[in-house]
Image (cartoon, rainbow, N blue to C red; front, side, top):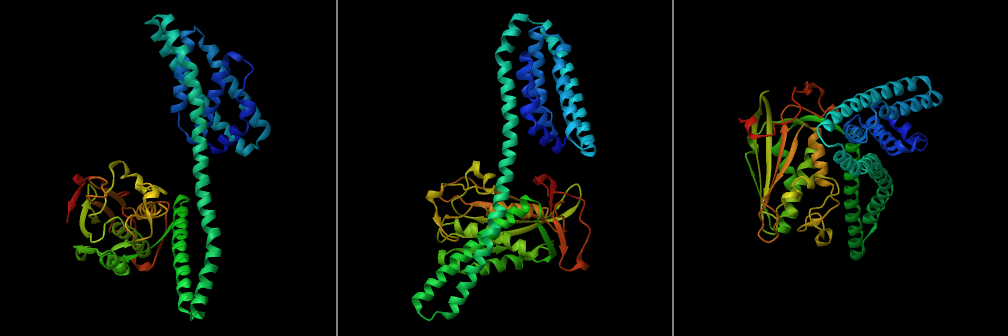
Length: 437
């Protein structure tokens, strides 16, 4: 049923084929054509089934014959067949003909079934009342089906356009930014005046910040286009997290915050991409610093458990803070790209300043990288309160044995360590399936 080439072809010929000379059938014909495009594009039948159910009921209420109603899809099918045969090469035409046949067989079957069901219902009710009800709603349902089908395709176009824009913009900005960073390095070596050197350092920090944003955009683009790759090796989680904490020491000192690390020395090495894990933990710890007030406390802990019914080892890490917290309605949305939980006008700018603003990419990238590893992340909090600081907990779950997503390209840093992926596709989702080791 699903054939994107057919969907594109039908959409290109909508002006010609979605109209009919029979004025009585015009609304049904147009709505049916839009639903057929949606079926070819997504392979789903819910929209066309809903349309036929309403149309069949209206036909019974107005005493229209079933054979007359079936004439609409039959005539439309003949026109589509004829036009494909005239315009499309034999090889792709054969696949399009097959998809058309499957679509119209479903439409005819549903039309007959719904007509007979409506007929039986009509026998048990007053014909005049049924006619009044369906006459009022029939045109609204057809208009709704038409608009929803068009809106769905437009949303798909916009999502693809957004992905393309992120990729193109990131690549185009990368080249001039590399030049800026190169000239900044030259100026650093040449400057002797302290004021000019300070200005140069400021330009350098801005360029580095921009470079980080561009790298995030490139990562997000690779995830959207399913081009992300991982280089797997044995990774010590305690060392990985301690390295991140060491690198962020200046921010902790500036914000007068403390970090407590517990139980990580009990965790086994896991098969993962060390660079990507560093990226994940740096983002999560950085967020904890950013959304925790000065003098706050952050706790990082870990444990090992087994999934059921397939006994596979997993690690669970929690990053807990006593910061501003997360509103219940934002617990899932914060992992969407470009989403900000609070108004941007209320944020300060900076990577470590309290509630500092960002582009809204960090947590989306974290979730994407964890999904690539076969892991997941969740957020929990009593609520958002920038005065009483209820805090939040981010929980990361990762497999001990490599279990990457199917669309992720894998390389091994040390090929001798390579092992077949376990036969479990996702981490356990409830405590009932876990057994602490």
